[in-house]
Image (cartoon, rainbow, N blue to C red; front, side, top):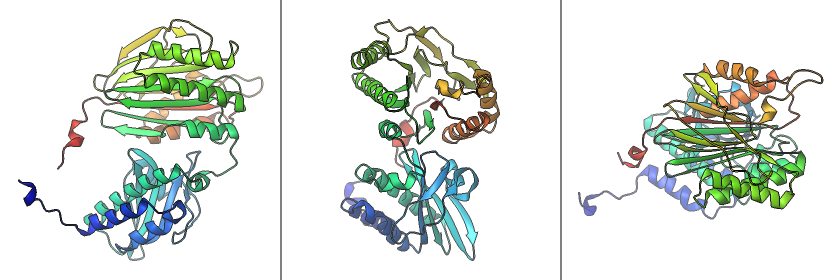
Length: 406
């Protein structure tokens, strides 16, 4: 078919989304709410709410704004909006002769919240258009977030320490999903985290992952974590080996903080096509391999000195994953919490908890969130140290099919 035969006329859906996109470039952040509500009204929608995930990953909180419905926060684990959020799928509820719709707001594969609205009736054309509208709104909000505090303030449910502010600014998106691999992470305590952090990047067929724990507390730990992650990213973008990344981070931390400071780290390269995994454990707890919904083993391996202790040649480990395998990386705050004079929570209790949670068959993002909250409850709600989880699921294959137009 020649270009002249292609229909390039503007349909209703294209016009609706196109006008929203055109206006979004200039609209200031505080006018996002009425812009979204007005566009939803064009297709007969009303009672519009934008619900954003809070930093503790416990609630969906309403974004304030003119023309939006501002209700009470909704629990992610026990609400209809939470179902849409966790399943990343539309949920519809009949309501007094109309339909209340809850649409996941996806920025790429990261989920930022839920768009809720009411229509008199819904058909497949409405669902398709509204799903795209919710995704476009998510992309717009992520873009605007870079130069406003409005969305941050809506998500913050309690005072946040300066150290935690630094860590949240440092983090990549909490979740990423592509056909070959999915990842998700969570930090506790969300409003007081200091030395824990994680980072990842998918460059061609290699997933790069680092989970770190800087010694100390508060600003000292947050500053050291910032230097470690900055050095890791700089080295990663230089396309060098894991051993060279370790050496670069080690030098950066030693130069900045001296020989008495250190950062434990778990650094990985995962080939998302073949499933070949290599990693360096720099004084960090061993990751858990979860296979067929059970912890198959802790990946104990030769341990390298923590980053900052100076100049050791890192000891590499490698293995071959099977499709569906999950890897759980965590920091020592997950297993070392204990009552005064009591025993630490421990690796075995963590494994038992993972096995119970894994039987539910949840997606990676929902699983890591529920695991973190369950572990916190089983530790008696205590978080005297940072406790971070980072979960990877490898599926394999290629992603070429997603580039094909239907």
